[in-house]
Image (cartoon, rainbow, N blue to C red; front, side, top):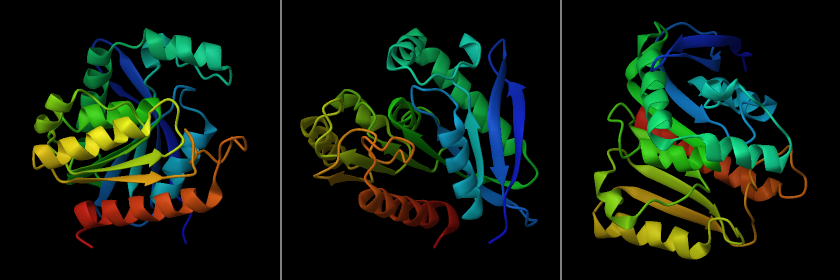
Length: 234
């Protein structure tokens, strides 16, 4: 398997330059793309590693820095992370994600009609939000993000695969069930997959306190299958 080509990038946003990390396969030809949205820790090495993992699977992966407006912060301290997350405004994030997808579509090695989005924790919240606001997105995989008001689910423009830990005390099983019911109620394509023995952030392999390797591997395979079905036609 070829190693991806990686680079730091900047691209125009709403009255600012947004930063990001780009990973892509070395092989020529337009590829489907995935926007990878970081957790509340910021655009750290874990998210960059995930972008590279997607690139090894044949995707152009761009991880935007949603803290570009806040000085491109990265932290390991939960108090700092909470403060950073609370400083974000949803309307700014949606503008930044719109700018991200607009930039990705201009890249010569991207198929602009095949664009997905994946997010984790805070990023999962925004991935789910973007799937109801950005028609460029053709598939969304939110990992344990906040579930919006049920009525807003009727605006989803992309199929979703929602990954959840059944022991999550931040995003409870009741919330995951509400999402599943909302998808059914409004006839929106999507699936909620819950791992009964997992807590919040179980996919993060840099956090041994919460990481669950077996379930994370299954969630990764489901993510790849879902994206392949909607972005590769496999």
